[in-house]
View 1 (cartoon, helix red, strand yellow):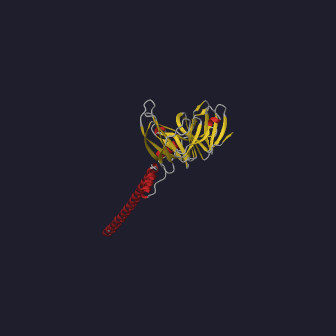
View 2: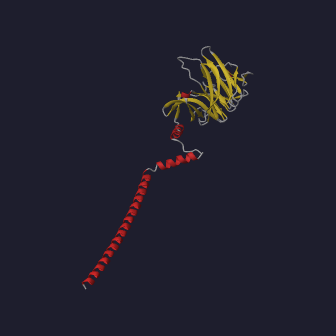
View 3: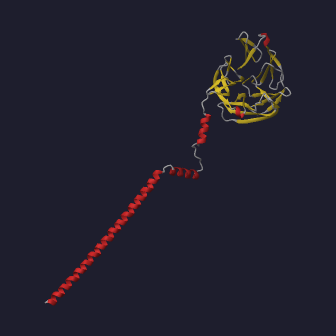
Length: 333
């Protein structure tokens, strides 16, 4: 009996031990499973956190990524980006600077020279102030010589001078060094440049080599393609005249005319006033003819202004006005 109980107890202990091993194995498996889940969760969390950090970093530096993309696109695309640089923008702002030109006056009248009549518009050279700064300008005036608007400011630092004409929608003007009257030097060249009627698209048209100390402007030009350059040499007291055709760029040295009271170009004809006599020449300063003897209307000072088909003559002493056509016919206004 004791032996039987011993056997039964032994069997019971064996089953108990087996059961404990199964529980331990299951617990171990469960523990491994939980550990694996935790590791996966940690990994996932780390990946999420890493992605969030990366995302956060991208959000922190948004300006770098578009810049990189633009650079990549520019390098792969042959068409340049049209967005102007800061330098270009500053140039545009400079060119678009508001002009507040106020011309100088003498005894209440504008100080004008080199008058040009082109397609009914009267241009002239004047000096004055722009935004309070001294400057030279090409302006427009009405028939009474009153200021209308500033066409363009001249860059005297670049030797732009107010001797000009207007033809085919462009302003043709001179560039040369301005002599110091206290220390005259013999200059050797003058350049002819052009610009559009807004003062842009500047380009050199011609360069003339000649010795001179200063250049005198023509009193007035009306509807002509010609410029006359009157170069004066103070060292030998001589004039040299050149005729320039703005359409063909032809330069011709012409005969020196005799005049002391004015010099004008009207279309293809030249006019010079000497001792109150107005003479007419062809474009080569040949075929001299007396157009009109102004002493018939005045023995005093007269003002001659070019108009569309002739001249407007003003007798200063009486303020009387006369119209003189290109054939020498005169009418009191």
